Image (cartoon, rainbow, N blue to C red; front, side, top):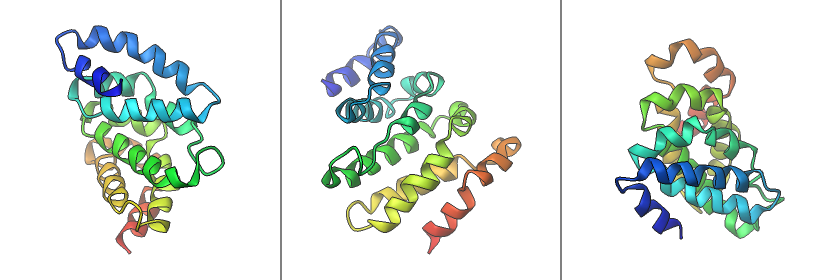
Length: 169
């Protein structure tokens, strides 16, 4: 279903399709069911691959929604956590590829999510998905560009420097 949705989004009617997808994603993200959150993460990861949908996802507040979902050991089977964290890192990394959404992502907590949850997990479980470190570093790099200088205090306060240092070790 997620692949079919991604194929639709690439079509000429993509904005119309996104108008129908976003309410569903918001509804599922607000759920208290971890299975719903995993579906949101899967769909968002697929949709974040496309330039045409990144802006829509970011402007709809998807980063804030992903931050609020408690995709951790308390809610998701431990065996799935490395893959979940990797998918979350890739999603954020993909979204940062659109310069126009980076400011919104910072304001919605992307740096904090990357530095507090994803980098720490990637370093502790590097053997499961070593690519998580790369995705986190790429996303953080995109979120610390010179065009975002007015938000530098927030980026530093949200842990970007600590995360970069940890990733470099």
